[in-house]
Length: 94
Image (cartoon, rainbow, N blue to C red; front, side, top):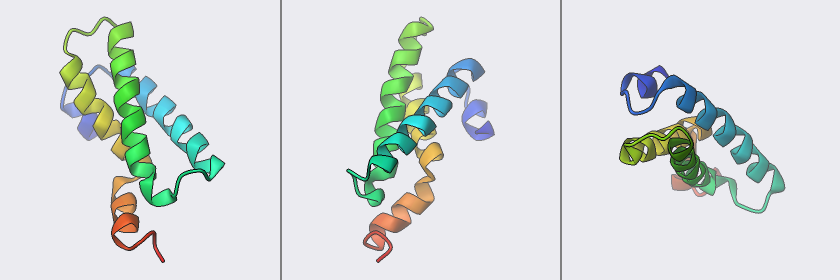
């Protein structure tokens, strides 16, 4: 998380809000078992993207492009992107 913060894409308040909401929503989707777990990192990145745009608009951030990049990074971070890519490449760990 310090790496994302160090990029100065968004402020710490936005970063925290996006990370917490993205984690909660991703786990909620994961617990429904409607989507295969190998797709969860991409779902998390999509949620991070949407949450970043909404947060940027609420905070009246003028640079939405930076917020989008931060949202994708936060989504990947909250889902454990490495594990997700490994699961996808290894056919879901089977």
